[in-house]
Amino acid sequence: MPRSPDAIAAVPVCVLTLNLWHDKGDWPKRRAMIVDEIRRLNPNLIALQEVLQRPGLRNQAEDLAQATGYKVRFVSVDADDAERRYGNAILYKIPGSAQDMRKLEPLNDYRTAAHAQATFDAMHNGADFYATHLHNEREGGAIRRRQIASLLDFIDDSQHTGNVIVAGDFNSDADSPELKALASRYRDAYAQAHPDSAADPARSTTLNPAYLPAQRIDHVFYDPKRFELIEARIVLNQPRDGVWASDHFGLFVRLRPTRPLESRRRH
Image (tube, rainbow, N blue to C red; front, side, top):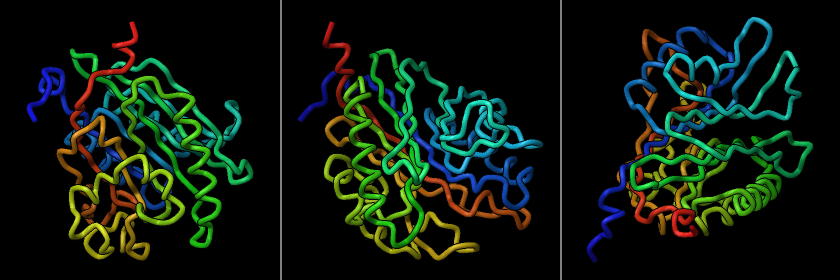
């Protein structure tokens, strides 16, 4: 079936997700590697997890944003005026309007989701982009399931465009029972691009085996009714002078919108 003129004109949107590993290891050297890769990949939208600020350490997301020319949306359960804050962030270059955040249930696990709406081409194609980081204990599937339900409620309450992308560190396989509700709505980009290797941790891990057992827990999910997948690949997975960028690898995804903004049709 031929694509519509809107789909043909749509510019791909590029997404990067990375767990920063806060300030562990040699942060200045790790920072330089991450900055270089962001400049090389030039993603439209970036989801960052384990973002830290403390006395003597500038907010890592704000620092990376300034170094690479992005705007930043940092979210945390810590008070705005606290000296130490820890959370998630979205970096974006493209015009953004709505921004929001939600503390995920259960509230005592101190997890959040960040949201930014962005428009990224002349056809007014856009996306509602969500960044999150779920509960980390291996036996915490019930908690993650509850966090996914909270995240989906947040998406339903806050999305404006109909074009939803969800990225982050889910601390679980994309096809795990606790992520089932998310996977029933949205597609796991890496698995769609690499169906033969996605389930093999040795070939597709996003956890850095130099520090952690191999497992693919960092994901980008997208709405297949709204986007065509172009590519998904693991990045920041090689050391430089013996230093790794993080204890996680990054995931880079390119998507092409296949339908214009719903909000454009509401006028």
